[in-house]
Image (tube, rainbow, N blue to C red; front, side, top):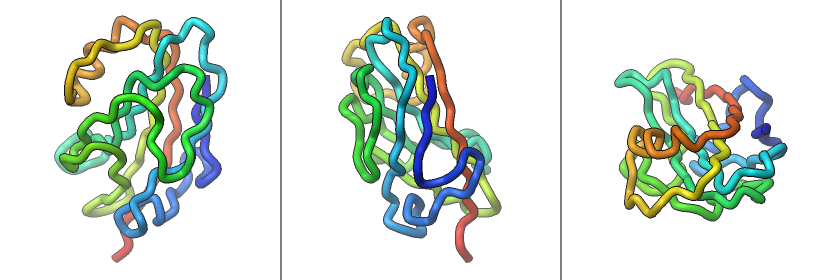
Length: 146
């Protein structure tokens, strides 16, 4: 399984339009190679370089497994969780200092998760853990303008 995008190279710089310096729009994502036995997908975008520890920018679960793209500025069908900005949906990179890495992680599950209400990333990961059958990752980086 793979997650790619047309906005920035793997490991490269995320354009400012997808950050707090721009329009804070989610980047376009392409998904390929989802296992045929997958019943749902989970998308988690986070920043491991945040000063206070891992910072979650986007949580979406119960995405239909036939999803092969997420257009720029759009959310996939599924359940949107609350990010660490305290909002539902995508919150773009906005590092307070330095260059941070941003991980867009995609998981294929052998189940659709039950309605668990608004989940934290920790609770989502715990509920999906026994169901993960494939995983993919896309990494970008961003340093805030001064």
